Image (tube, rainbow, N blue to C red; front, top):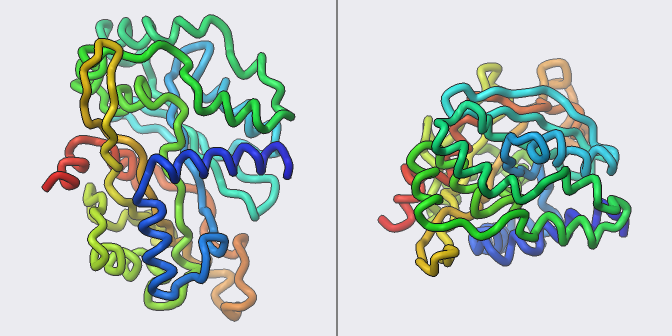
Length: 299
């Protein structure tokens, strides 16, 4: 197993343990005979959230996956949410794409910025520079360890009132935000986001309905949907306990590009489908962890 495969395997193992919806979705797909095992799922992409401070953020985080042969692609900007992002293409199509976003901390209020920096300043230099990136186990450990002290409930709630993204990251740090099932590989009629969403709802899953349950790119070739984030019971540094947003599962349908429409289904490969991401879709998918969506899980 390569260092990259060790890292990806570690991410998925801990993510599945923390997000019961992952196993529930996979088990439902097997029961419906959409797949025979989890290994048949193509993971379209995985996503991470970061804090935009000098020693952390995307410039730090991306060093890990650039080392493994990933290549940085298009940038995306989310003015209202004060976020920037890049996506990264894998060195081999058997690996997932990676989507990394970053909070523009400098654009927040002075109070919120001071709260965030009181935590992130505990990381004085870029921590990735000290990692042996060829040691997959060390990188896996790094991605799941505390970068700064456990936040107080008061700080979490103050950040949440201004940026739910900031609150998510201050507690969850580099925890895997989601993985993504490529639905276009499934048997009809579940090989579209609309068809797969019908299947999910029939099984009782709560879907992110911000901007509609299916988010579609203007060109019509990238469609995405997601579950609402799992709520997890956590303890803050002051001892208070609270249920907060954890991670979720996403679903993507990448349609065949017009210039390849003549191909037989057996000939279609990843490079024949719509590539990249769409800011309008991602903007709404971010809200899978927001309270406007997670309220569904208790309804």
